[in-house]
Image (cartoon, rainbow, N blue to C red; front, side):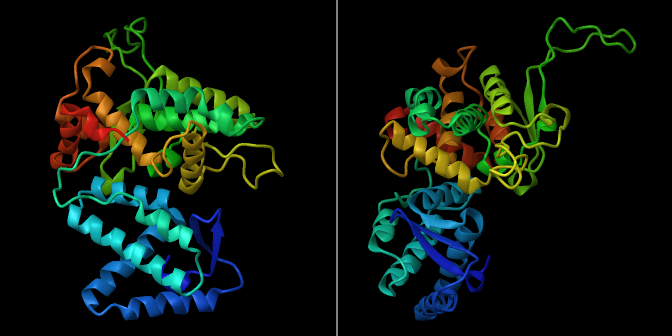
Length: 347
């Protein structure tokens, strides 16, 4: 979505600028964004800043502290240097400040954005992630606290945390995941192959990521906790034909027909982010610290921590790089700093 395609602005709880088609202030908002871009003296800055705000809107559908933090970590995950990430974040804040001055957005939105940490000048700044205890609380305690009386949302919350924290999937990969991409375990009891009488190798359950960023396909092990959380979501989501349809999303919207337009449609990345934000609020974590990419960081750090690994051995950097789908080992190496000094990675 380009800036000229933005139709309306709506503020939710004073900390989110939601941009979506609609009626009302379309022309005035577009004019304000155009005026902001033209106010930038340097053509290079104008292009970079405008591209940043357009990319953020296109990916997340809103401008908020959570979406800005997710945008920051997505760019770093793609290999962008710290200076490039800082420039993109500055562009988003600059546009928001202009919209505040123009009266489209209350100052609370801008203040929330300004509190989001920006990368330092060094590119090896370790990622921030929730602790194992916080992840456990997000999974076991937060869903019922955040969504009392709503078993579907509780199931969504538990499944989202389990999937992202235990596999390291990007949020875009998680919402695109189909049941057919989840391969069941092949236990040691199934050692004899039907053909040629040859033994087969035992295999843990796994997820095939077919369309990772940069076209990097990979296979990621998946534990029993994730499978149980997804199976529970199947039951709660009210999709009786789900088990027989491998094309159904693993994270389907669910619900009775009439309550939602398409119960078997995938959840949006925006909805996933909002559910995680509600879970973080439910256990009193600082605002803006729980978002999809933070759980990816938690997964990566856990794989380098021998105390969190079943075999007591940390993954090698190369194995972690393949599981995360990084093109460059330098991107993965950022986690080594945090693994060597866990205090650097605490939220």
